[in-house]
Length: 315
Image 1 (cartoon, rainbow, N blue to C red):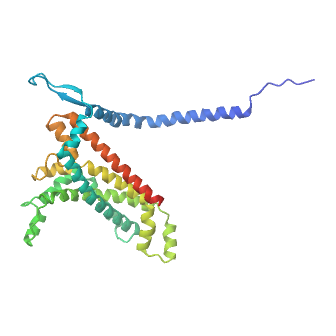
Image 2 (cartoon, rainbow, N blue to C red; image 1 turned 180 degrees about the vertical axis):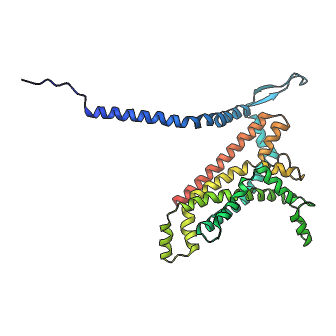
Image 3 (cartoon, rainbow, N blue to C red; image 1 turned 180 degrees about the horizontal axis):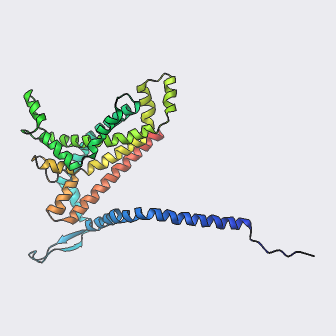
């Protein structure tokens, strides 16, 4: 006599189905967590970028005597051609390149030196000095520019007065010095921020490496140069990347200083040129082309910096 048995599905199929169900739930949960970010990204990043691209391909055209209001029409790459031919915009970009070549390395070297000192513990009251170094970053850019502009203006600046008392004549707002006066404001404000990023990377390094190096007779300088700095290279690249992008976006500091000297024009930086076109000359299409062109330049520089850093790691 045989016993009838109910047919069962293979165990492997059941496991695959259960695994697919878990993956489906994890996928739904992942998208649920990503939804707020994606919504904000679309609203404040993707849509404005797309709108700027559309606007940069159009231009306003007046008909007759210009009394009936402008009509927008498709202009193709005409606005981008204007950007390349605009000596003021090109001059602003070149000026920012010069600014970045000097200011960014100086700022990052200062940030690295401070981070290494704090990490080595050679300074007393480390937390106080860390807070003091980071505090300028908490000051809004406009406020920082106003504070430093007060120290630059002859007649009211105590710094200029002290220098004049010892027969040193310095015009911080002169044609040859105003760019570096602006660079000083940015360096004062952002060095502490970059220092904090590098210091956090140093704190994450295993202390056993340093102890082993000391046992082998390495000095503090040797540990910093041969171990610490190479291991925090990703943080150095990150801070350099942020600094390059920030250089091309320079706006608040020269706008404030412009009210105190005639040597900072309305198109002194690319961002100022776009602002002047949009709100001063009522040409938002050309301003959008300037903004998109600036974004392309920033992307190219960032990509080049990342590639150079990667080649350095591979070699």
